Structures are given as C-alpha cells and as structure tokens.
Image (cartoon, rainbow, N blue to C red; front, side):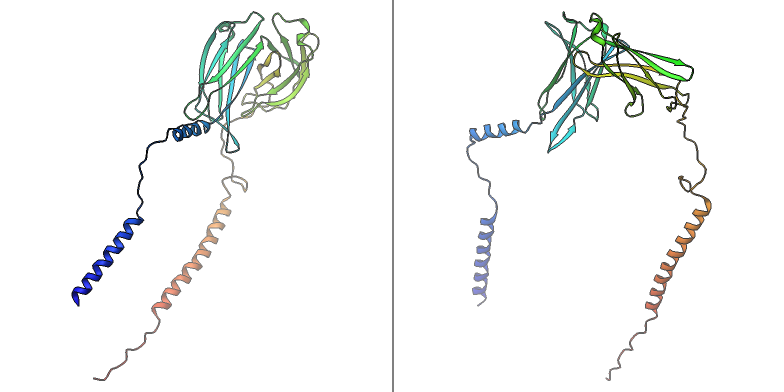
Length: 312
C-alpha cells in the first residue's frame, strides 16, 4: 500500500513538472531580416525632433550688432524651449562664410552673440548677411536661419527743458537716400528687471527724426537713474535697431532690504497675536491630551472577570 502511494505521488510530481516547463517563456532564435532592420532604422530616424530656429539681428547705437537665436520644438503637442544646444553664427559674403563664434542656448532656448561692426565685411550692395546654424545630434535634426539687413543706426539724445523731459531720436543709414528714414515708427521704452516697458512712440519726419515726451514719475534705482531705449522692430530693410541712454530722471527707489515694523500685513506679526495664537493652540491640544489620558486610565481600571473555581 505504501509503495502504491509513493508511485502515485511521484507520477503527479512529474506531471506538474512538465506542465510548469511548458508554461516557461522560451527565446526563439531566427535569422535577422534585413528589411525589418531597415524599417526599424527608418522609424528611429523619423522619431528625431525637428527644432525651429528663430533668428533676428539687432543693430545697436554703440557700433555693435546682437545676433539672437531662439530654438524651440513641438513635442507632444507643446512647444518647448531647447537648452544646452550649440548655435554657430556666420557672416555670409559673396564667396565665403566667416565664422563669428558660437553660443550655448540657455534655459529659455536663447543664444545671443555680440559682434563689432569693425569685424564685419559689407557686401557690394551695402548689406550684411548673417546665418545661425544648429548642426543637430542623435536626438534632433539640423536647423538654421538667415537674415540680411542694410547697415543703419539710431541716435538717441535726452533733452530737459524746465520740467519737460523728452528724448530726440534720429535714424541714420550710411549711403541711403534722404527719404529712407521717413515715416518710421520708433518705440520708446524704459528698461525693467524682466522686459522693457513701453512708455511712448512716434513717427519720424522727413529728416528721420522724432521727439517723444518722457513721464517724470518713473521709478529708478537708488540714485534715480533710468535707462531709456529707442527701438525699431522688424523693419524689412534694416531689421531691428536699438539705442539706449541712461539719465537721472527717475524717482529714487532703494533696493536694500530693511526690517519692517511688526504689523498684521508683514512677516513679523505683533506680539499680542503670537501670544494669543500660542495660548489657543495649548488649550486645544491640551484637551486632546487629557481625553487620551482619560481613555488609557479607564482601560486600566476596567474590572476583570473572576476565574471560575473548579472542583477536583
């Protein structure tokens, strides 16, 4: 009987063992299909991110030019700024391309290179041609942008007459016709921590000049200095032009941190409020602690059932 039981148990173990082996995953090896490999590579290439590069040229009043590039890409339906990308700036002439340098994009996807006019070569028609390029990598495709502008400049002059504050802005374009600076819209801004604040604008006359009044109540630094900007944006011939000047026309505002007196609206509340708050917290939490203590005390004082007496 014992031997029959052992044989039956052994057969069951073998049967369940074979069933477990059949359920285990098995790796199948087959010959590699070249067509499938090519299809996989094509899908990987198609999954590369296609960035867009926005490129502008800003001609400044200090005889320098800012080359500004912004790199973005649409990922899962949302445009994101691409940072830590190498953007190379070039000047393109009739025969060659001159490397002006490279900048790594910041967290906003922006890269700005400042170059001097003396280092640039003007084309035969008096224009300047610039190019910004991203060479691409394993995850992103190449991107570039090209801008051609004619050389020009804004000149800004502050004028103070009695209590009236104004700035006079003049458009200057070497070799251009006298009417080139007519009917240009020039915006006047005051520099702020994040973005310039627009405070006025005007249209140039036949001499390329415009005068704009400046408010007298603008906040400045601790000495009352404000930085005024004159700008022309996205002109089809001259691109972006900018000129700046700093004047002591603002209201002095100190940036030093000063301890404020105790008040309801400050980070340091009055003493009576602190005392009241602490007293209320002690009373509320004290009631909870008393309740918990009483519960434990009642549990310890619970009567125990007497042990039944058994007759021997």
